[in-house]
Image (cartoon, rainbow, N blue to C red):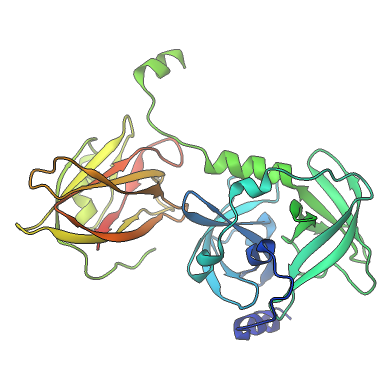
Length: 355
């Protein structure tokens, strides 16, 4: 059944789009080893994320994500930073599905009232990749969860439904995580308020530098055609000599304590200016240091690096990759500023590449 589901999804390249809604495009299927289920993709700070049940991951760091028809699939690196009793995980999605990532985190923030007896719909993917809408009715609700029962004949919460979202009109109100009856017609859902609160807390967390006043009161493959650059300086020293900034241009990692924003300065090799359109910054999410989060890239076309101008800004994903492009610009100097980290502790960067 699982192999058949995946093979059909991969073989599907088109379907009728009658009644297609934005929520349809964000509904995805998940494969994690022999586990299959659902998730929902959204965009935050230029990154594409997928939210899904924790039990689908089963300790795996990487899962496959399949879109609704016309089907494309991508990989995702998954993190489970939430409290143990919450069946919730989040992943960073890379690849073709990123183009369908249009809803933002705020989409989860305004759920409708879901009193007992409310008529709702479950959205899930059929084996063909088409969206299926299953009519349900809310039977019970509490602070963290709600329960809903299918009201259509010959429909059930079959294996692989876990992670599908429940909607009241066009508003998401919960994510199914468990089947409650032998007849497979009633499910347990995490309330959308709980999902939004935990996602917001995780994604908006900034383990940045703390000012003295405040403290007193309180595996990626390398790319080709990289621009030849000289590393000129960094604001912050490494934690140990072996973790020096020279590792950014070779093997090893540059590791530092973010006591203030860290500006890393590069100069183009030679006398001529270079054309820059892409910046890739990579860190190892499995290493014993935290990932950088907030990043700002400025450039200067002046020989002495004066009058820098903004080029890019954003956040590194939880998979340890920042990869951004924009219109080409003539540069002689490039300045990478690390403004925050995903967690407290030393921050590590493995490589910085310019194209």
